[in-house]
Amino acid sequence: MKERETWTGKAGFILACIGSAIGLGNIWMFPWRLGQFGGAAFLIPYFIFVFGLGTTGLMGEFGFGRAQKRGAMGAFEKAFEEKKLPFGVAIGSIPVITQTGIFIFYSVVVGWILKYFVLAVSGSFYTIDIANTFGNFAGHAESIPWNLLAIVITLGIVILGVKNGIEKINRIMMPSLFIIFIILVIRSLTLPGAIEGVKYLLVPDWSYLLKPMTWIMALGQAFFTVSLGGAGMLVLGSYLKKDEDIPSSAISTALFDTTAAFLAAFIIIPAAFAFGLDINAGPPLLFITMPHIFKVMTGGYVFGIAFFLCILFAGISTEVVLMEVTVEAFMDRFGWSRKKSVILVALIGFAFGVPLDINMEWFGKFADVVSIYLLPLSALLAAITFFWIYGIDRARAEINRGAKRPLGKWWGFFAKYVFVFVAGAVLILGIIYGGIG
Image (cartoon, rainbow, N blue to C red; front, side, top):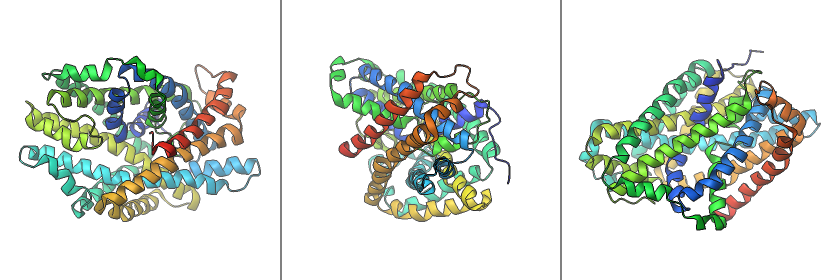
């Protein structure tokens, strides 16, 4: 059997995890929720959840993957077989199917970003009708080639493997993303009127702490911002060496992901306030609000290119991990080569993505089913399997292997009972409210 690839070290692993966690939804959703749910007051429940529950979930998925040295299907299968339980492969296939579904619609969105990056480079924001361009592009056949380009770029990275592909590209993209983000924050904060956006983000309204919805939305934001889903972080963890420090890696991932969300907030919201634009636009913030800002601001051409380059880095880095989940499953289950598996996953992604390219209603329904129902279910199944079926004592021992600050028995109780219960609550609340992540 071919020896499994591993990361060259902790830094490469963490950069790949950060790349997976920094997603497009986080970039547009976090600023909106921070402003709408009490400003700085929202940060109290958010920090409690992201550094308590989010890091616990990350440790679990990292540890589960490393312990089994396999992705979701193989890891679930081994854990179930050890306890002589049936359906391990079937249950483990749910997170893989979920991540494949996300890969399909995410490729469509990354295609949109590629299109807008090219528009920024060509200076087209100065000549096009920004308000109507997105509506005339998304949901139409014109978006198909861009979807294909997104998949081809991702294929080119994943086919090179863990060290030479995923790790190397994240060593370039993640530092670059943060550097450009910081430059953009400085520019945004120096715009006339930007201070009102800062107040919107940070001035606390403590009354929101008394509203259950604030805590529910903070929980959803924290839970999904670190990319919990029972497969992505698990497969990244499966390439870890035995002596790597899992607890510190989980904390670093959550910290840098949160930092990226803050930087995005301080780029988008102050700039939107400075030009009197809608801050509650959701995804159109990226494709309508920001292009309009770059069109009218001094130096907008350069900053527009930089902004969409950052968004492209965030999209591609997540896309790479989504593809790797299914690629690893094919390699593990059928013994296929990486090349064959990558090409098949790319073909699946494109074939199922084309209908979403040409029909926004189908896109929305598909994305909702995957993200509202299947994703939190997958995270819950992974937590139950690792903390309960694999066993909390073994789970804690695996996570403590290589840890400079080992976790005490209290953590085992917290993970087994509190985290699993909350993961179940996230699933139920998401169904009730139509999504909280």
